[in-house]
Amino acid sequence: MNVGKKHYEQIPIPEELDRVVWDSMGKAAREARARHLRRWAVSAAAVFCAAFLCANVGPLYAYASRLPVIGAVVQVLHVGGGGERTDGAHAAAEAAGETVEFHFESRSGELDTAPVYTVSHLLAPNRMNLTLRGVRSIDYEAIRESLLATEAVRDVYRAMIGDDSAFGFVIVLNSGYTYEITEHADPASLSVRFYPDPAYQPEQTVYYLRSEAVPYGEGLGLLAEQYPGEAAQLQTRSGEYIITVGQYETSDEAEAALQALEETTGGASGLFVASGRADDIPEA
Image (tube, rainbow, N blue to C red; front, side, top):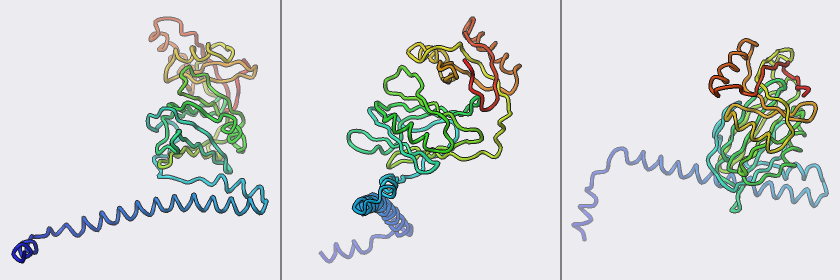
């Protein structure tokens, strides 16, 4: 036994071992602190809500019940997309000032990562298009009411998508407003923050390609599928819907885009060039 102990004590120890051990301990401690912080935030929100519920302070209780448990920031973006493939997720939302928080969960609880999503920003009118995929159900009324509760949002309606695991939203913004999206993980959420854009030009004229107006329904979805990845749905003032493709600074650019599209499709595209100022909604 003494000989074995002597050999054990004579084993050379790499100089980097202490640093590796300490780094690993530090990482474990940080992860433990993060887990503890999330648990603390949930508990604190629950205690805060319970206290004010007992005191019958309605507005403060309502605010406390909306306290988010913020996860790790994955990315911040204006246009583009992110998330990971999911199936069977449920989406809801709630507003806090000029920020609307989209939350995602499954039957087993909160999701760690956001479902696949895409977002685009267009003018005429000023709007953002948000699409969620891998989502089987949504609380649409909660989402719509939360968005309309902000100063920035003028109107909200759903896009027609044939896929039963995808939901699209057209969020029409008031003049001069823009937004940014922050994607969080663990737990998953999308924070949409609206704010005034000092560079916004309401008199700016934009050109785009559009279809004839059609009623909201399956035909609208089929029309949008003819231009995958390019088409956006838009409700006109008459209450019908059109498909728009692209956004251009001049009519010449729009005409060239239309010609290129028709060459690609091998004939008439069913679209024509239209224009409007930044906040204009087409009549029909």
